[in-house]
Image 1 (cartoon, each protein chain N blue to C red):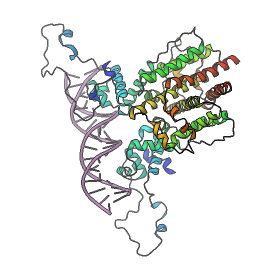
Image 2: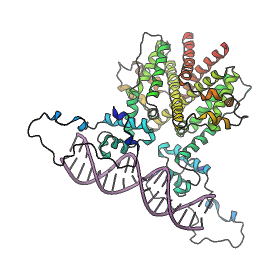
Image 3: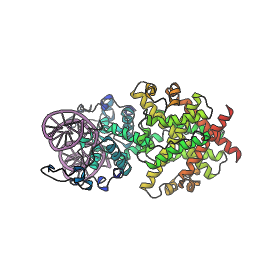
Image 4: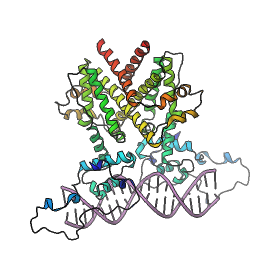
Length: 256
Length: 256
DNA sequence: ACCTGAACACCGTTCAAGT
DNA sequence: ACCTGAACACCGTTCAAGT
């Protein structure tokens, strides 16, 4: 858990790595008397075994803290207080680690589904789950989106979408297209929210006054709607577009 | 132009850089007789001046050839046959170079617009322009999408979309939302096509048999529609989703 | 089986020196 | 004003050595 938000020390690059809080015993003190060794060591002195799971979680923590471009094997290693090369006992290389990150985040998608609910509501819930993931792991998102997933974790949203489309009465090819349209919208929304979030992280309110310097002849609408554009009710924006898609799909389902 | 698709030599990393095809004159031969110097040197001997434009184009060439993760200042420099540090006379750092790439690609968007055409057709044309950009610069796309643009190049699509929405009769806030929905779909589609393209580049036909290993209880629809899913008529998929959005917008415009 | 340090071939960027 | 090489603090990964 604490690995998900690594200590600030991991974000500063220059200072030398502090010596780990391990029992620094030059000669290993063999317990000749049985003292139930699992209770012998005090609280956090035992370092949990290095594992692929822990490595992936640490990577996600670093990505969320400093952005995906700041992720390095070496930083993951120091965050876990091991040597770099130890990671390679559990992960073949950095690309595989990023795939692990993608899969881990994709598995956090909340795909709870009530098959007895009307299909438009089920479709909405599916797309909303993507939006929630984008909020929970904003900076890991680009990693997820740039690693296609033909693993179960990656195909689960597709399965749900196809199930919903079938419930709506669409034939196979139409179901596939409806699924792709919904997921394209989900992905596009995720990207947009990510950009908005990064922009706010870097500046206060970014676009506001940059609109002022635009050529009024070329950008009449942008300038006229500057205040509407500066406002970012991502929730309402998202629901508006989702509503468009669902409405059109209902129309299409009724015609079939 | 030739920089847009750099020679294969730029993609192999290990071999030493071949000495440039420059006139290797240890002592510079000063032309004491006037021979119209701009014609004196044979064909490609004159190296064009290093410029921000040339640097950005070379970067795009490398990205399209080897992917964005393979872009490095050093590779750009050798592609242009200059020292690395020479680049820094025209570009402050790598981040700025990537912003240049994003802007250059965004400027290639074909935003031709016929204000007398019916607005649904104008809206379609706008979203299709994004799709075309994704086909022309597939691998530069992630760079474009991950650098928000409050420059004119980045706001031009928004301006067009708002103009179309106004022509449809939407009020300001609704126009902004309609624009965001359309652009979200455009972006989502671009991401999907990119993933499909990368998948095909790496394997022959990727998903086809990976579906076979899925748990039939959890993935009944994916398995049943495996052949439809394997087929990727990105054109038709794209138009299907676009049609949904436009249809719903027309409905909404008629109600207002 | 797991961990590790040294080494190698890369990075981006600062600095001081050249023209 | 523009170009450059050396140097620095980083990278990912191979290899050989330890337990």
